[in-house]
Length: 76
Image (cartoon, rainbow, N blue to C red; front, side, top):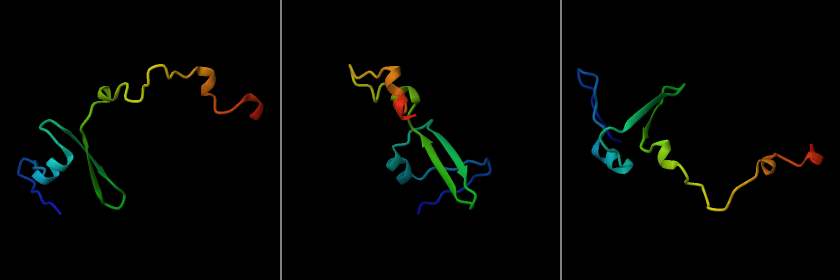
């Protein structure tokens, strides 16, 4: 378990081992979530949605709108 302390200015430092394991860099956005049971989840936003653009794209692997239906019309 890692420990950090809150300063008078309401700031804290992410422990070095956590920064290293998550590859956190200065300027990384941290999202804090308080769960109903009081548990706190902290998530680091390490990638922009723009960086993910095309990650699933395979050249020539296009799907026609007609093929995106959930089922055949006869099955509905």
